[in-house]
Length: 174
Ligand SMILES: CC(C)(COP(=O)(O)OP(=O)(O)OC[C@H]1O[C@@H](n2cnc3c(N)ncnc32)[C@H](O)[C@@H]1OP(=O)(O)O)[C@@H](O)C(=O)NCCC(=O)NCCS
Image 1 (cartoon, helix red, strand yellow):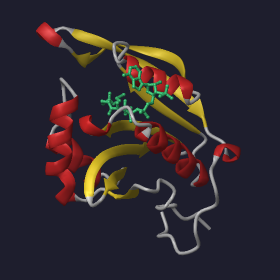
Image 2: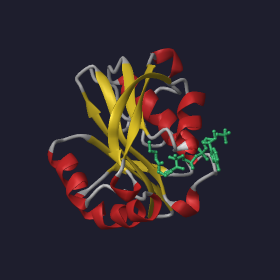
Image 3: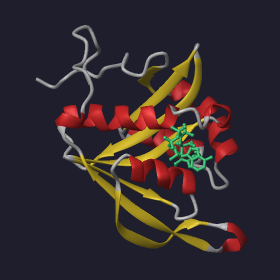
Image 4: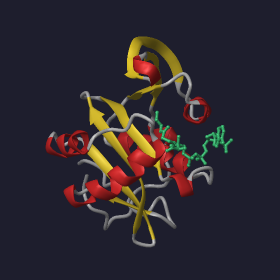
């Protein structure tokens, strides 16, 4: 039996599946926090493709989101974002921890991601959560003045010992 997703594990925030109707709110955050944001088509295509996409909610307001692709017994973290006004309060760390726990419960053996070498905040978060650099994708990201920036490929093994409390019986199946 596939374990349930623990939607309450991020209290006082809630996590729920990202819906097509969330894309405008997501895009408002995306444009604010990234110099080279995803497009609304990237999010819509992710939802159509059935990727794991999650909205993080505080008092009914969307304050963060993530997109995860299964490949198939590993997961690729494609997007992890916290709204500008909510950054630096430990929320990104909690959301990443929840993603690691919930995907491990559902059978993922490892999580993979790309990050810009210039993104110190994200790199520190990933390193302190156990991710190690395993490669470089040359000229992966767009950058300023029509240049390109490399991507660091980071990976972390997932195991159930790192998972939090068992999911509540009433939680929605994954
Ligand atoms: C990266 C991001 C998801 C982290 O979420 P967050 O809620 O801001 O981060 P947290 O408050 O949980 O802090 C996590 C760690 O990030 C690092 N960090 C946080 N603020 C930082 C700052 N101002 N400078 C450097 N590192 C910082 C620290 O290592 C911190 O851990 P610590 O507080 O235990 O030392 C968020 O800042 C964000 O959405 N940034 C813009 C989008 C982005 O870059 N996404 C990642 C793409 S790969």
